[in-house]
Image 1 (cartoon, rainbow, N blue to C red):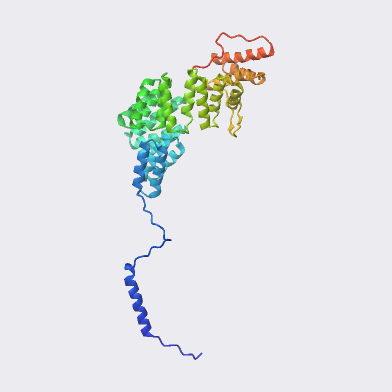
Image 2: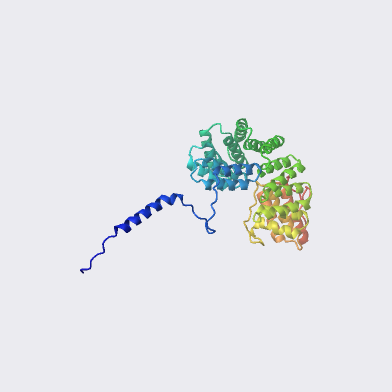
Length: 417
């Protein structure tokens, strides 16, 4: 307890202080020695370069790559105030390729950054309209026009929305005048935009002015010739105008630009069906179904082509999925489709299914006759359907050895395409 403490060595303390001071003075001049284990620094791309890249991809028709570049631009600078425009342009691209929910989400992201962006409201409405949410779509587009009455794209999107409502038997008695006016305003304000020409073409197509619709769609193609949806519309109008060779060319281009969409192959199959080229019709119907194997309409379309090519068991199988529902061999759950008096296509699939059942050996009249009864009971005013229902009765009567029903129309009539 009486041990003495060592005295402080002031000389050593002075030397240590000097060494620390020298170290601090030399530290900024010391070069770090690189070793093989040090990570290689990677330069950070400015977000503007991703935006430029996205615009180039979109012009080339590489819309999915454009969307990815827009996403990279946002990831590179999440808090950039300019992301409002990036979100809007990404949403516009997503609508063109059918990514409607994603487009809606990105338009709403833009609105989170700027609630008064007319374009964000307009694109949100466009995305909602393509999801058939007409009420909210119209509210969003009207808000866009309140913010900017001269927003050409908002007028174009409004025209498209009104056409969709027209096809859905909604929108009121003056809807044709309204959609025509909106498309003309869009064209006068934004004649150099794809959307304005597309919207005007869509209105003209809906009102049966196919040559004028073709002109507008071609004008849209001249601005950007790499958007599948425009070629699809152009192909539809050529088909409705009876110009089948150009329709097939346009639809083939649409299929090239968006191979996962079954619609171009479906329409081409119907064109070959109309012209009596049933083998080609079957081939395109098969391609369409490969793109979307769970779609009951595509299965029914293929079943129709099988029937025309005398492949009755295959026709019964595919049309049976459409009428009755069921689980396909590859595991897809298909819901049944009710007979609708308002759809010529559904009616056609129903009576073709009944006819195919009577062509089996032996005829499956226990399943075919209820189909004929449904047609006669529910759509007695459709002459084509009633004739084919009577044909089902006749074939089953022949199979049972009883007298046939009578009919005055041509055998196995088909609805006008």
